Image 1: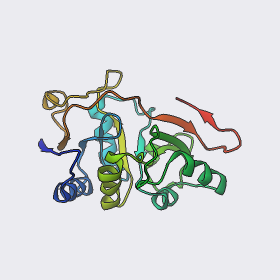
Image 2: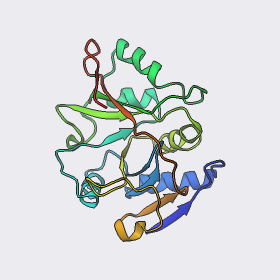
Image 3: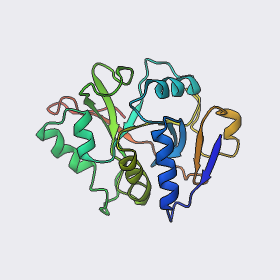
Length: 206
């Protein structure tokens, strides 16, 4: 296991390149998302997906959230009509904007490019990171460098409380390839989840 420490107030471009390269090499990585630490990897590789399920001891009937770096990337992997696009541009502000919003995950119909194990009834939960400093300076640039969606699931054994301090991470997840450590994260609400598959009947899941 390798650990890299990063300063959330000043992201080093070389660190960003290094982390992106590890994702591209199909490694499983612990990294700080918007609200909590996540465990993930590139969403296109079945071996990465299976390893994350195994590490978390998660039932394969429960799917993962994935992150995209732009609307362009979203539309490559998901069907998005004009009304859905308009809705998303209200809940996913421009990455370089200043509006503060709660992270919002939406469920959309997949184009079938990503592995079927990520789908539930042909849909996948997906999020564009929110427009705060962390999303703007780290998550979105990272995903754009990787150039494909990444898996984002909470850093925990399934059913247990998410881990917010990486002090003993090697004892809990010894098979993780890389840990991106930005220190103990402040307590925040998890992302809300909205089912957007039927834009005429939008459903709040969480």
